[in-house]
Image (tube, rainbow, N blue to C red; front, side):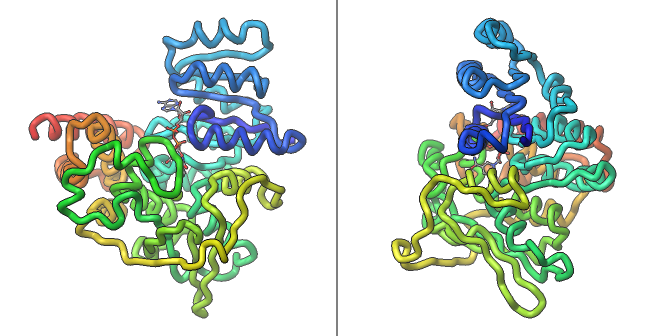
Amino acid sequence: MKKIAILGSTGSIGTQALDVIKQHPDQFQAHTLTAGSNAELLIKQAREFKPDTVVIANEDKYTTVSQALSDLPIKVYAGPDALCQVVESTQIDMVLTAMVGFAGLRPTIAAIKAGKAIALANKETLVVAGQIISTLCTTHKVPILPVDSEHSAIFQCLNGEACNPIKRILLTASGGPFRSSTLAQLATVTAKQALQHPNWKMGAKITIDSATMLNKGFEMIEAHWLYNVKPHDIQIVIHPESIIHSAIEFNDGAVIAQLGTPDMRLPIQYAFSFPYRLPLQGKRLNLFEIGTLHFEQPDAQRFPCLQLAYDAIERKGNMPCILNAAGEITNAAFRNERISFLQIPQIIAQAMEQVDFIPQPTLDDLFQTDAITRQITESIISNH
Ligand code: NAD
Ligand code: MG
């Protein structure tokens, strides 16, 4: 029985992870569930899955959660520090990091230091602190099992290939809701339109990042750290059907890909069950139904966030952290209709110029960079 802590159990990845656990009650147990502020759903999940512990990050919701669960033997905590403490429980085997944004960094580090296997959905952790996280994982002998569908695909393609270097990664991207929009159309798109992703139903932040393709930039950085492949050897391939989840090319030219219907429960379950494959209910791939698969080059002019991500990882240091923080602030500002879609990359680029560059940042430097970048990005937005 694998005991799993789910950080962000009320989100898109979190709820799908609970569905996987429900399909395999003899294999997996939800030991700890945590949420940001959705007390109602956290309570409902706790009553159904009977975890050992729950945490609500928003302290104002503590009484609501603890009172609602007072008839059950479930430990209830609140606040961001509690997230870092609960993952250290000796009973936990694996921590699924399914919370969104920079907030995932501290609990992920706490889990690694406690020696827990990490099922990583929170890509922001690797974007912000890839070097530090990689070193920590080596020191504490902790594996990272990727949950992001592309990185899970690469991971699956690498099975049995330990002695063969990767020549190139083909990182597929749906292209998002605005794949075929002109630059003139992009100037006036709304958050509501951007939130309609053609293939995946995800949380709001990553859905907007998919529309700007900043998400794909983050995934390129994530792949760089997970698989030690140089950024310019990671090619982004627009593939609107989201059937090929990514591929790798070897020295002899062989390209190995992983295919399937777009369903995040597969990569989540594979991270839980690796190296075993378990049955999973859901739609199966039917190539005759799909008929044709398409591939396109990404367009740097319409989606400048991609190049910003390549620039950030080429410069290294705290630059990817600046990219991430400016990305989080502009993402929220666009959702709140404070800035337009095309202003997102412009403002991120300005933040990347204005925040002080640190070539070899410590963890403290990264926390400071995050805070300063948020301030600077806010002031750029206010002065627009
Ligand atoms: P979501 O917004 O649906 O859910 C986020 C979860 O984190 C919720 O449970 C929320 O309560 C919790 N949370 C938010 N802020 C918090 C905070 N400050 N402290 C504690 N908890 C907090 O997001 P999602 O789409 O499930 O994405 C989660 C992560 O997984 C992101 O890093 C995303 O990039 C990654 N990811 C998601 C998908 C997907 O299909 N949704 C695919 C690949 C990767
Ligand atoms: Mg992905």
